Length: 114
Length: 111
Image (cartoon, rainbow over all chains, first blue to last red; front, side, top):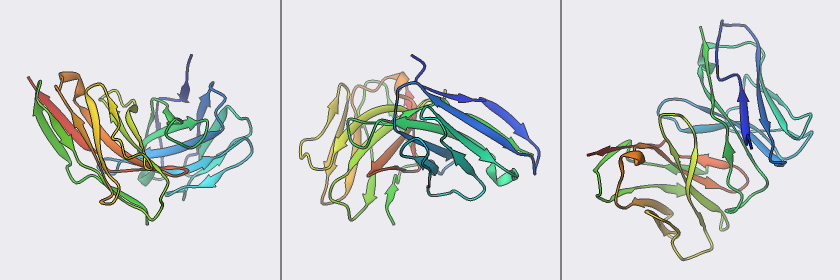
């Protein structure tokens, strides 16, 4: 039972390069989320999805795009990476909203932009 | 704006002692949920305890309990009989349809 799997775990990019982070969940969850974690700032929501084919902006969406073409996958794209996007990225999923539906997190992706 | 505040960037406790981590939040919602997550050096986000806002009774999970004061918008975490494995970052989070996290408290446990 893999839960939430993030690919890759580490990546170094040059400014201006593009890349896609993949999040895959095997729990048939409806809701999926992308967060970034910076030192001293906790986790901030970038984008989220409430079901296949849907996406919505979170707290810090600028510079990122997302897609949810399949229910089990949620992709986070950086079209033109900037040093300010150096961070640890977490994906999470949940079946719904509520105390009995806590979010399940992946192990994170450490992304460095030079 | 809906915010979650953890005013203690760092806390320390001796093994077997009790420690309380503070969390306050600001919302006009009446129905919501509150969570504490633990993040050890491995970076995993581990759910510690959860609380429904409409329940007066404080949640308890083994050595972990909360003091939920809805009127004061306070949600503190008490760790009893602290163990070395409790050392981690602890995040308070408030949930309507998406989680809002606090900035975290780093807990050190000394033998």
